[in-house]
Image: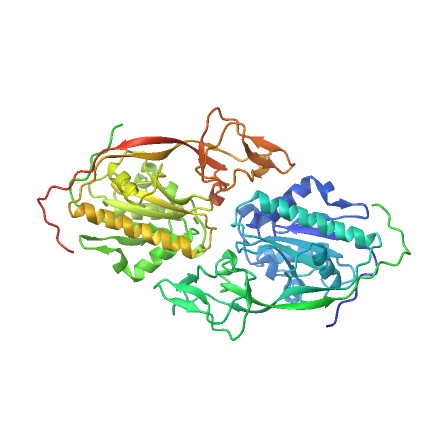
Length: 304
Length: 304
């Protein structure tokens, strides 16, 4: 498995983004809080900047106002000419790309931590880019949580924290505290690395995206059923062929037709009804993450 | 305590309304289902009609598109002249009032059952009008659930079913089934009454609205804290003076300042952030509900 090169310099430009989806409240309110009290994001070698990624959607307490911001960081969007008809999130994506990118450039931020909530029973889940970034995997390992699979990236590296279950538009104290603690640990990990700590290779279990399952639908495209009670809240548990996955409004059960065991996640996530996804299918696999060598001792770090 | 007179004729005009709030999915999808399969709402003496109360908000999966429909059935709204600037829900409230009312008139529907979800941990909760309607209380008793307090009413009588916890925009099988069963039992109760069954007086515990508590806020009006983890999900449990109710983002606790025990409900309901309510306060009390006399045997009921 080809891995991206590990960083050879300290990570000094780090951003923590909340409210990429305006109704995922832990990140919205953590970002707002840190904008008032940024000292919580300071470490000796760097200060992470807090960003409320989608202020208009956050004000409206909706996922987005024009289109999904977290699907807007494509090259097509970022490089096309601005027009007066652009949805708000297209304009905002270009703005964030200017601040934190440009995407895939040498000037880009070193690391972005993007904060999300889900209505699914996924507890604390870390979503990593499908590019194989050993640094991000070492951070995951440091956070002592194994679940990973995909994400945006304007910065050189990044991770999403996805915490649930929490309804949209609701702040729950336990999830808020857990997200705050995970962000603190992530920054601590970067600090350790910046100060010259290396990390040995290790093996870790990951859940790799391998497909999606839509709800049962009528010919007109409306929902014809609901996630089966036996599947609800069973994120990351094995789903065997033949197990019930939906209950039709008529009362009938729909069984899983796949030919092998998968591990569903995002089961019954509110935001994915419109994306025609009742749950995401993943395979459980094990990867060997190479060592993260310590930074060369050359340049001593200035406290900013 | 003065009680409204009990009905002296069978209840033949009955409506079941879902999607009064378009992101409370159990009612939205039950109404849509019954519009396709109305036989589930038939009883020998009557057929309840299913109504998707707010189709535009349901299509948008939002609580409302212009203003809260469930706060729009005021005399001022219902009797004022229509203008082209009216919010959608104002127009829709007048339309529903034409179909199901007019409110407080002899022509009004006999009974409306209005279906809601909450993100609060309220389980199956029945909200009754503050007018003392023995018929509705007997229906509550029949449904074997005690919690009651308030509601809209275009019809002569009505109840709201409020089931949770369920996130907005999500359909959960257990809550869906429970709501379906409660509606069936409510119709069975009306059928029993229509067929000449009387019901004896009884005593019941109710939770009566006695105030509201807003979130702690900054001077600018933003949230300054979050429902305390010890209060989260404790709907209908006693809240003592001095108990912690909020956790500030700064880490401090806010204690309940009231001078007597109350029973909170709608704790951390998503829809009430904008209404400046972190929870509703109720008093637990006991009421004696008078007997519901059987209908005079005079008019035999025609099967429609």
